[in-house]
Length: 219
Length: 219
Image 1: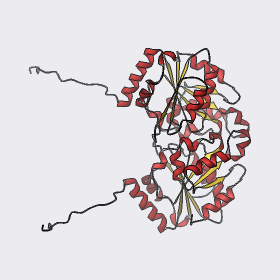
Image 2 (image 1 turned 45 degrees about the vertical axis):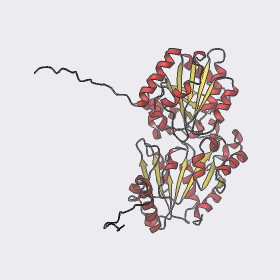
Image 3 (image 1 turned 90 degrees about the horizontal axis):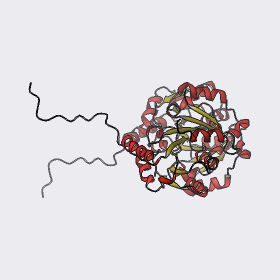
Image 4 (image 1 turned 120 degrees about the vertical axis):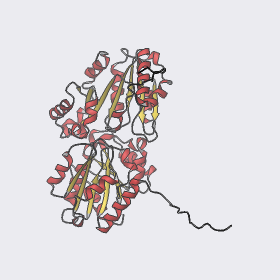
């Protein structure tokens, strides 16, 4: 059979709009040499506190920028701005997660050429943010001790999706029934290669190891 | 002009599928005389613990049934079953909230004629559950003290949508910077008529008032 005159174009591996925008964000980050971390946690898990601790721990070593994601308010970005680092607040207006398009919009408001490490605080939610790539290099979940040690049973997807889990509010351990060993085992059961950090943003415990991991660009 | 032979049917006030199913659930609850409470909170806010406290506080006064909503696992329903009340676990398999259809499915597994008060534990999430009616009579949000007193700024919709807010883990107040007065004022600013309860499921503080409110069918 004679070959037709026109070749049929075949488009392979169609990306979702979000994935496509996330790849564009990622290329932009790489062009500017910015390492990007997507920080996810339940409401009140201590995302902003961890970012503030990290800013202090890395002051003079890495130039940090922050994107704050919240359904409403600028409470968190005001705390970050007080630490004198560039910060953009995204208010999702009801949406339960950040997406790549929101990040793209925020990037035009950040001096990327002056940033080595961009910390993105996602909306407080253990479920929905996991499904939306932002263009980040690493993903982190925080579990705070008061939330209880059973979270990997109930929210397995987020613990599978991250490069590191930060166990926060360790200073409250004496007042709560949180089994650290059991929690670590549960997390490793769903994600054997995950990095684990025990920290307290209140006392500073464990922040040094966490900050060292952030600086390690090869992770 | 002569009137046409056929009248055009006009369907008014189209309900969403979820709202329609929620109304069907509500009628079923009323037929069986079951009072239904939808309990929402962030992961680790203490929903299951509050339900367990409530079961003990109302034992002999109200016949309680429970529906447990989680993305995965039966951790919570096992704790409820140990208290010897009828319980159904709904695993949403990734979905970030309960909906009316899930509740409808669960009702066929509950002895409604033997239940006075049905407590529904929604998926741990401060955002998404608010948009889905289940057929409940009352909605409750829990905020636990370790989450911080700024939550009404960040998640206004849930605080606007509920009949009561339970401030849980009050026993941890000495170890945390949580301004009770400020929190109450924030909540009342978005929802002036909301009932507020300060409780500790650990010490039992405030459980009596909360249980009395639950028994008050006229609320």
